[in-house]
Image (tube, rainbow, N blue to C red):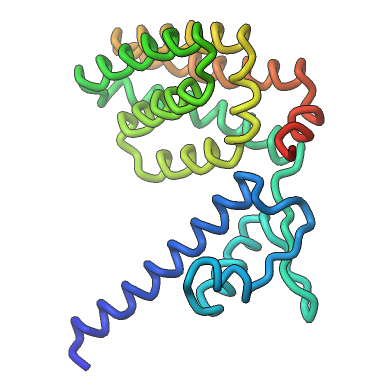
Length: 231
């Protein structure tokens, strides 16, 4: 077998494993599989149209992430995201979001500033009409623009993962009229700091934005949010 053919084979193998891993993780985070539910390799492989090998490899990787618990001679079970996980993620995020905004002030382009301004305008438009699916999508886009502008692949990857991990919690909290208005006001202040190229201000505002989210979650009741997320 030629070297380039071997390389392609390895790449395809890992690409398949990556797709299977992302799909199972997405299903767990989206609530398709419930807490303590068994993840049956054969059924998942059949559903995804793959062999059991990439499914088994994906489950092992998900165990390392803490989303799955593999019990020898019994099977793999969903661990999911606990209340403590969510609190930890938001506290860590508050620090990383601040760092991301600080670094973004050094690299953000005029086009990215304009994109952020457009997002805040659309965010307000859809929030007034209670289009919460669009609000969540726009919130994702807002943060993604800043992650990209930070010019750090590592930071972008970590924050995108954290954002994804708490997507069901975010969906519920962003359905609150009061929090939606405050969220967009906080977004606008962050954009202003980025436009001014003020790293200290951008970092503080981005950090406070996530800390305010934590407070909102506490006021709402994290256990209530998790219960709703499971429904």
